[in-house]
Image (cartoon, rainbow, N blue to C red):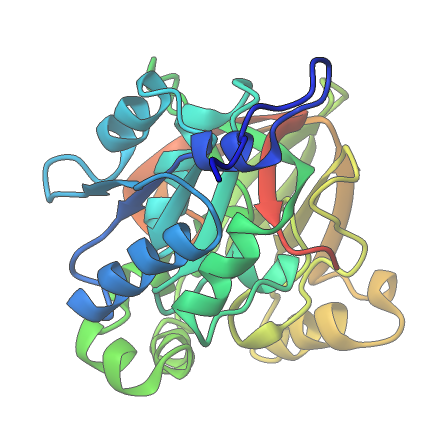
Length: 319
């Protein structure tokens, strides 16, 4: 007997539709758990009814932008960022506004976006399954321009000028491999001494506030390293930016910062200020270290950020 695989007119052929779905994996080979992961992912696609995936490795010269564009040009159904926060940022920068979803397979130390979204950070194969079997969720993307550059970049979790970026710049890679996020604590202690810098911060084009700061952070999510909830009201899809200004004063100034971030009465210390808005412009009197989503990207004196609501789709397991 010959099996009839022809679908009834007007009825979708589920088997054919499933087989036509294809994923691309943009992977940082330096973070890869090994060849066994590639074999496991190919096998997972086969068992879940997906076509053979497009496998694209990043390089030192191209950390994900070119690979994500290649995946987009290939017309895949989802582009999976397999690596650290830098790989995620690069893939997101290309996919934002296209309608093509991004999946997350966390392989880095921070995995900041994955932690905020509740993505499995312990098992790459399980995270891959969640992408292939998941649904889409729209999240906000933030566009950042440093010192008036034409090179606009995006971030998904946090941008920072000053102390927090100096921590990222000075964290020892060997300690990151051995200690994970605790390596940032070690760098943070070493970077506590330092001089404040005069800053002018304008939210949504309003009259600027002036502070002598150690750090200005712009958040799109609530949690940073170690699960610390530094922006307690921030959600990745709430349509607003959260700003945190650290202005420790005197010898005990950092105690005021700690109270301002972790205390119950956050607005009762002069060392910490919280603001919200859709755009922000930060101008400093001298250059400070700069970071996006935990990646140190140099120094600058002027940062402009703009929120792009619901600009990126994330393919993930239902939460």
